[in-house]
Length: 265
Ligand code: PGA
Image (cartoon, rainbow, N blue to C red; front, side, top):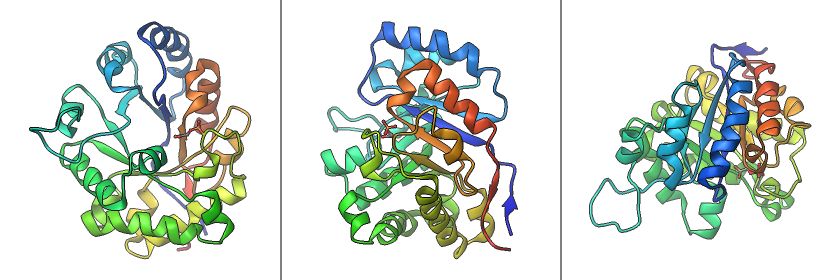
């Protein structure tokens, strides 16, 4: 049996290290009038650090939330080049990505650091978006569920189930990120269901309320099928979030998706 809840689907655009003042302004000029008409989807954008405050100003009259792509695990002080959770909160961020696979792979962020960042973000009043996902080799050797479970466990151990579900989870198979190779809706749903069931084993109501996003080459033409899966509650969008019409189409697909999940009751 499926359960339903009041949560809205959530679509987050991750601009990564792209954009300029002029490009961001032009993207938002095209995007905001279109998505302002979509009422049943929550949208957030994560620009690079230097553009957060100008993008915050441009988003001011809209319902689109601001997010950051990373944060420091440290609270303040002598950490040259780092940005703290309280600074992000101070300038109006609502979300922050934590443990994106590019940070795990290219900047040596391990599960412990990711868990620390998650806890730090929550404490500052931000909503951490915990990214989890397996590499191609791990999928091919049948380790997908173990990898994802271990990544969840690191955060569960640090903050517990009640705080974990104050955040958002993004399942992003590493082999699908920026490659044009999307997980099929069935592949994605299987992992989302595993995540939901794993959380439900600890707290059924919390699991039902938790939003689990899919990320990895989501495009205008595959978003609807993905978002129609019962345990997919929206998307984390990289490349396609840099194009106003593609991103708007993805937001539209999310607003028409179901808000149910597959936990048996
Ligand atoms: P992609 O990136 O949509 O370009 O695959 C997703 C992500 O890295 O969050």
